[in-house]
Amino acid sequence: MDNKHNESGTTGDSIVKIENLSHRYTVQWAIKGINLQINKKGIYGLLGSNGAGKSTLMNIMCGVLKQTNGDIFINNVNVKHDPIQAKRFIGFLPQKPPLHTDLTVEEYLRYAAYLRWIPGNSVKVAIDEVLEKCNITHFRKRLIRNLSGGYQQRVGIAQAIIHRPSLVVFDEPTNGLDPNQVLEIRKLIAEIGEERTVILSTHMLTEVQAVCDYIYMVEQGQMVFQGTVNEFDNYLSPNSLLISMMNPPLTDELSSLHGVLKVEEIGSNRFRLQFIDVRDVTENIMRLSLERGWQLTEISLEKNSLDTIFAELSKKAHK
Ligand SMILES: Nc1ncnc2c1ncn2[C@@H]1O[C@H](COP(=O)(O)OP(=O)(O)OP(=O)(O)O)[C@@H](O)[C@H]1O
Image (tube, rainbow, N blue to C red; front, side):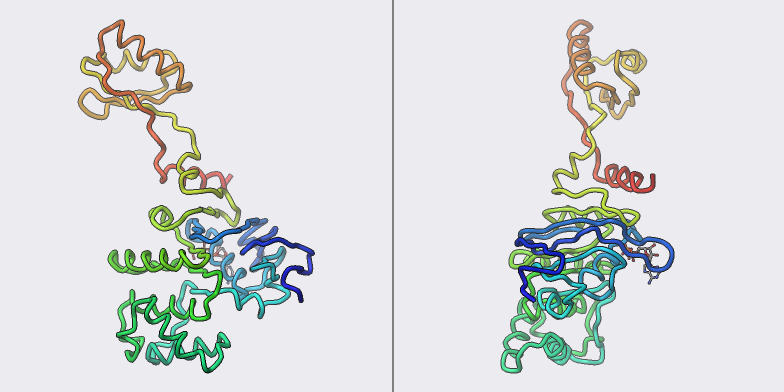
């Protein structure tokens, strides 16, 4: 089939296109009505709590699981209709890396190259290239089972990129690693993201902040947010102000101001004010500070923490 024209007639130059994807294992829907489109290189985070549907989505995307409804196109090839062709474009590191621990690193990568149909005369170059990329050349003769968790993960990443796929999918790639290994694997993923499109799943906000350009957040099998990390950060408009004064009034006086919902003292002469309308309350405070001699030294909007946004979006999915 022509790559540019799939059976649903979709054309265009997307790297990944997901249309109304739903999957039901038994009775309950694990994912429902997911749509997304990725048109350019970068690192995309699939964020969600445990059980949100991330692995289900990734397994379908990589042709490991067949969806109940909807379509996925990788470089315009429909994964359901032409899985063999679609899989040529995809590298996948599932949540449980598919390692054969009784093989050496090199033996395993040769096997991965064979599974990926790399021609015999190109296998050595492909192996050398990924060993170097993943910084495991010195372990090429080592049995995989004798490697640390972080290095085993590097081998898993090496098998995912050995055929130079345009899309690499990592399901919770740093799960279970110690903090140093986490940093090293993130660095490696960032390097891979410079050359290819990477989608990684995680339930950790810190991970998307650290490595991703763009976030897709899934909760209860539904997409509850998609946008940049910055947009995620600004998703909920702030509803609290931080103010400091050299000569503050009593907390009760601040609480009684028009438009103030709640006042909390958070340090010497510093307060957090929850408000209804930001303009009203800031004007009020600045005017009264002058009139009553409070000597205002700080007034700033307090941003919602990413954790708050995460919690709000998770709640939204449960409604
Ligand atoms: N093989 C299966 N049979 C039945 N239900 C399943 C199966 N695999 C997953 N589920 C259910 O589908 C939902 C989504 O699971 P999934 O593993 O995709 O979520 P996840 O976001 O990857 O979670 P985790 O981070 O815990 O892996 C969950 O309710 C899960 O219990």
